[in-house]
Length: 273
Image 1 (cartoon, rainbow, N blue to C red):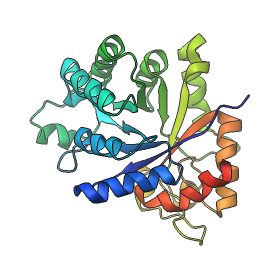
Image 2: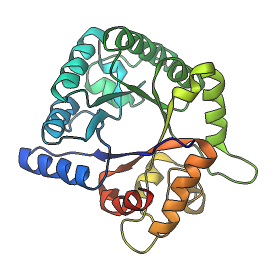
Image 3: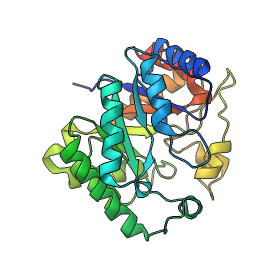
Image 4: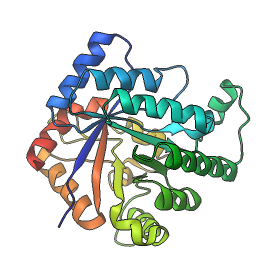
């Protein structure tokens, strides 16, 4: 039997309490299951903001998407995680990544470790959370073999980046999921597979705004971007069909969108439920 869908939406930046609370309540009413915050310097800090979102809602879960594990000591992060878990009534998912922006490490006056060292530290952080905050679901997002191995063996939710275009000759998403399945072994069926959408139509044109996709998928033409799983195009009915295909073909049941896509994607959620 197919797993139930979950849908998330990312809040990019906001600071006024009333506007934050109103937004959270609208997202809850629109059918979203989770509201996310990213973790970047010189913007809104995730934990205070997620606390405000949780306190303004009844059903909506909140989550980080994703914390830069390199910014945190495990015990101090666990204190933040368990505090938000309690304040939200258990409605918190902690999302983690290894960190990749060298400039942010420099701005935080932290050394920028090698990729292997960053992934190793991520594993150390997850191990501590597994021991001291075992009831908080962990999402790990990334694409590399070492990171996905840790995620498959220790996390609850796998955040897939989608990779390049899906063609008759190549399917990077299927390849990454097969890798996760092999690394997870018997626990694969308990994992939730997530895909974060970076572009979709925000009006009735059916044409997605590819500005974010161009930043995250450098080197691809616009036509190639439209073939990647993190870009949705077409009518609401077309996108509904595509989301069902992601579940039926790949087992992806957790879809997240950006703040600017929320209104358009709410129509997709209504059709799927």
